[in-house]
Amino acid sequence: MSFYTDPAPYFDEWRARGPALVETPDGQRSWMISRYDDVVQALSHPGLSSALFLGGMLSHTDPPEHTQLRKPVARAFSTRRMEALRPRIEQIANELLDAWEDAEEVDVIETFAHPLPITVICELLGVPEEDRDEIRTLSTELVVPATMTEAFGRFAAYVERLLKTKEPGDDVITELRDEPNLVMNLVLLITAGHETTVHLIGNGLLALLRDPDLKRSLADDPITVPEAVEEFLRLDGPLALGVGRVATSDVMIGGVTIPRSSQVTISLGAANRDPSRYPDPDVLQLGRDPHVGFGHGIHYCVGARLARIEGEIAFGTLLRRSPELVLAAEPEWRESFIRGLGSFRVRPKP
Image 1: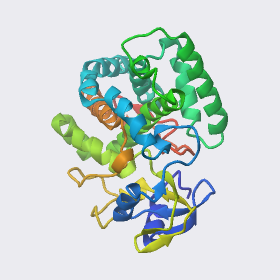
Image 2: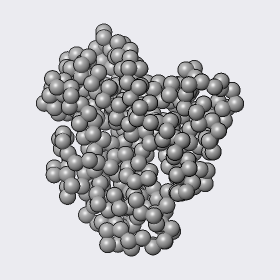
Image 3: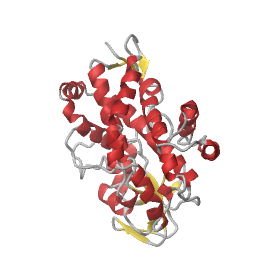
Image 4: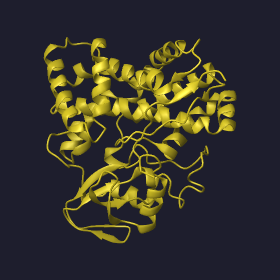
C-alpha cells in the first residue's frame, strides 16, 4: 500500500526507528524526524535551516530575512481581519450548497472544498474573479510532483503580470505591494491559502462520514465543531509528509546526531499520530492535546486562523444543510505533497 493511500504504516515505521536516514515517499534520501517531541524540537532548532532554495519565499527563509518578511504578512493576516471575513465565508459556503439542493449525488471536492477557499483567498488577496479558475489549476499542479516545476514558472509569471496590471484596492496584494520578494510570497500565500484548506475540508469530511455517531453529535451540537476541526487536522491533516530542512551544522535530535549538510524531513503527520502523546492515535476523538498540523515555532502557519475559520464554517454549514450526508462511493487519494482526495462523491440525502 502506498504512502498516499495510507500513510499510517509509514508513520509507525519512522517513529519506531527514531531519527534515521530513509527513502521518502517521493524517492529522496532524507533524515526523517517523526516522533512528536523530536518534531517540536526540530521545528525550532536553529541548526535546521528552512532555506532550501534561493528566492526569498517566507516558508524557506531563516532569520533575520524571515523576520523581516513575516511581519507585514502577519499584519495582513491579522486575527481581526480574518474574523471579519466570517460573514462573507458563510455566504460563499451557503451559495455553493444551494447547488446541492436537488442533486442526488455531488463531488465534494469539485463543488465545495475547492471553490470555497479559492474564492476566499482570491478575494482577500485581490485576484480578479476571471483569473480564479487559472489560479485553482496552478495551485493544484504546484503540489503534484510531476507538474510542480513547470507550474511554478507559470504561476510566478502570472503574479508578475498581475502586479503590472492590477489597480490598487482594499486587499492584501495592494497592502504588500512594496514588500521584498512579493512574487514568491504571493505564490506561497495563494497555494497555502487554497490547497491545504481544500483537503482539510475533504479529509475531515471523509473521517466524519466514517463516524456517524460523531456526525450526529456535531449536527446536534454545533458548538463543538471547532474542536472537530482541530481533530481533523491532527488525524489526517494535509501536511502528512511534513516540511523540509537542511542541517547547517551537526544537529542532535532525539539522541541521534544528524550530520551537517543533511537533508531533513520533519513529518507533521507522524508526530500527530504519536501514541506517546495521543492514546489510540488512529481514532477520531475530540478534546485531544494540541497538534502540530500548522507547524511550530517561527514558521507556524501565518494563515492558521483563516484555515480554522474556513473549516469551522465549512463543516458547520454542511452539517446544518445536509445532516444526512452519506458517502456515495469510496474516494481515491491523490499522489501529492498535500495529502488529499481526488474525486469524493457523496449523496446529500440518503
